View 1: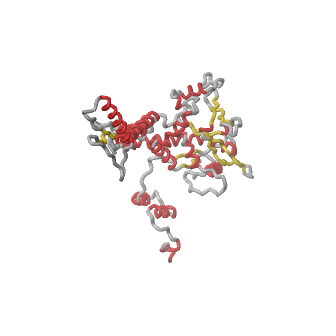
View 2: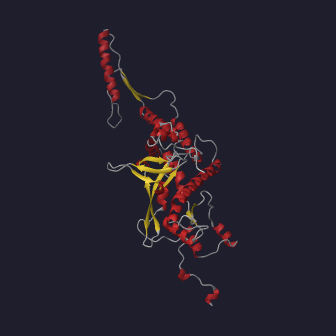
View 3: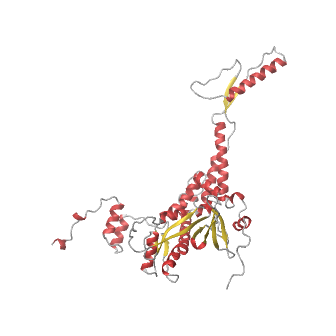
Length: 423
């Protein structure tokens, strides 16, 4: 049974309708203007850069494997080999060397840019071997700056994207069956997505203003304001003579104040009765550091990373609270990783399996390792696992232990033989 309603009107696809789908009322943050804004935020604001790294690095660092449960070994090995990933539950086999080999780590790093721009788009590129099998050559990134249009269907699905043409050529249209599109928090027909930095934008702008005021305050008040007091005119002068003399003295004093500098040979000569001094601010200046700390905390709070600010002068709570807040943060990271895996499953792995084995063939899944749940490996833990029979002391385990604790590599020629073999 087909749909009666719609999410987008494909007959009138304009910038106005696109902004309406995005529901963005700030023109600076309406796509494509938002690309420059968010790019500038992540490059110029240390706190924004810090929270982005806090989100992306654990996802890049975790183990990604191919789960072939319910699939034929041939299919699972094909997918794992093309993606350059290990198979869950099996020893990792290094892929054979070949040019243009797909780099999953580089692909994942670019896919995570959906958190910055709201979307990250890739084009599937395949190669065909002599035996007729199709392999994933690369997922070519299509930078957000190059995208001129999202062609959206009536049901809200994506039909295609268009890129700006090069060297005056017409726009390049890429159909959806060639695309892998990551969208952060997509709603309906909004394929632009929502940047992770959207909620932090206001705080970043306000912090930038306070930083400018702070720099200006330091410049104006760092050494005080030079003030020159002129001498008094002679009492015997008439009003006109005194006024003319004072005007010249004031003009000369202003010139001295403007050129006031410090140095080994710096100095100033003044007539009798005149004086010069550097006057500081009377009263108390506002504590701009307090505002900056507050804005930094709010930027971290926007991505659930406010535990990074605990222990500061303006923070509430204690370091003990960080464990509770950190659990929410790691849950959000696991959710992002699962979202990335879901998109890869649907639009990379399943497409690759369809091309080689048909649409009825079960496809393996991409599985991210749990973030924040890895237990600390100690010698006591290994001993307990060996004693209970959960681990068997074999060559890989011995190699791991030696590498973990910096023990020299095992020399197989000097290994003691068992007593029965020696006899």
